[in-house]
Length: 205
Image (cartoon, rainbow, N blue to C red):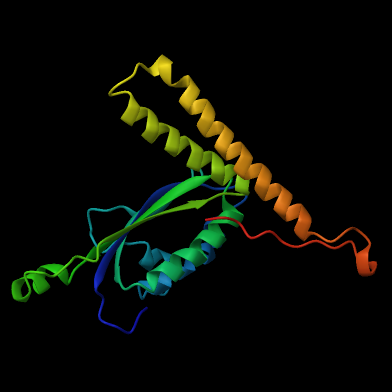
């Protein structure tokens, strides 16, 4: 955990579908960056949220999903913690998922008492995990379509928005095609330097 005085309440929220072979013991290691940041010695202790009314970090064995509604006190270094957790979850997920991370500035109200011009450092970050880039882009696409449709339904009928959704699909299809092409260019031809060659892809998040 950070040695500095925590200046944020950090809330993580989301649900990640896990591969069927992921065990609770493996999940302990996957989420290690989170529970260690909270100052815990195990997932059992670290899964408890800063707020008792929140369920925390839960492994739903029936649905085989990781459910997160968890708050911890911390600083901006938590961004790197989430980077590490997302990389771990990429390997364990069975489909794409979104994680919402909200930073609440706990020092803002105190600062307002002495400085009327004080500005809040609240922040919101949306992260995506998945077994491959296509799964991650599917989640991003679905969220964008939902947001756009909800906005435009104020002015148009749902049936009139098919063309808009189609254009969004084209954008994501092109992005995925470009990514696949760039990855192919990065892989040396088979047999070059006497090896089959290949480079492990870094998952997007």
